Image 1 (cartoon, one colour):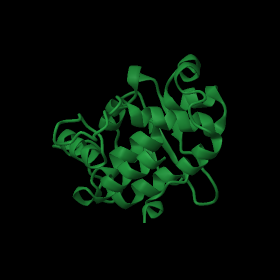
Image 2 (cartoon, one colour):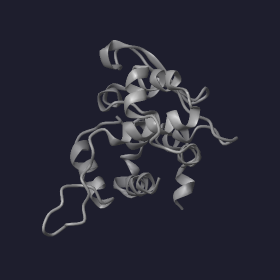
Image 3 (cartoon, rainbow, N blue to C red):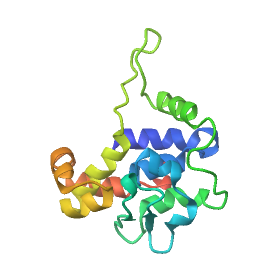
Image 4 (spheres, rainbow, N blue to C red):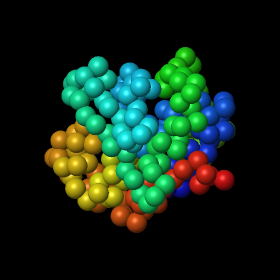
Length: 182
């Protein structure tokens, strides 16, 4: 949870928050990088709290509906992260994105340790997506729902995501909002 807060804080303060939509979709939507790259704003249903990943966006062209977890009365936290950016409708992965995200990760403490920066921690591949699916499973306690939500098989969810997050920690994760950082 601390790592997620650190990364979200950096993303919020880096280049006018331009990395927030990407980071939030990866972290709270569990989308794959390629899915975020192809995702359009009109696929995000702010009223129903869902993301429609259609054939043009999904891996292996498998459609799915990503219903955003609702904890309490405040509504899905992913919407809170996306709403300030929906008017501009900037691409989720725009020009220079990779360099900007690398710089933001470094500011948050991730990267390749060097002599000058020995305290950087290696960035595990797809860690944000894995975090999302692990927290989804800990929250809903149903591997079938989490596999459908994340676009995986139940066997993949069982093998890679089960038992990594405690239920109470997942609830705190799904309550992270921009206002939590202040």
